[in-house]
Length: 101
Image 1: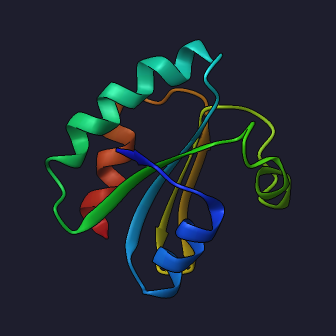
Image 2 (image 1 turned 180 degrees about the vertical axis):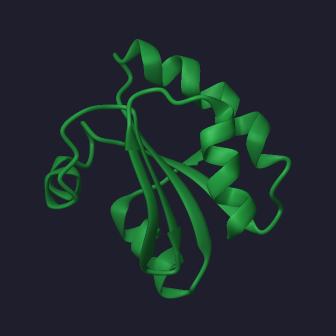
């Protein structure tokens, strides 16, 4: 999973890509647990781009999206928000949404 900027995320969305975004913070323990799980999951979904955005480095965008806690995972199909959750969820929750994309 590579870290991207808000501009890069908007570009991926504009291109119509399917994107799973992990909004995280370096000081967040649940975030540190989630990232390896998502990295492993990314190998199972070739048609979905898995990325992460540091909320401390992209505060304006985090506020714009209403992110109040980390980790927050958002799944987009292009510019359409398909799924959003805050906190650490079981892998099966993410996979269920990704399988339907």
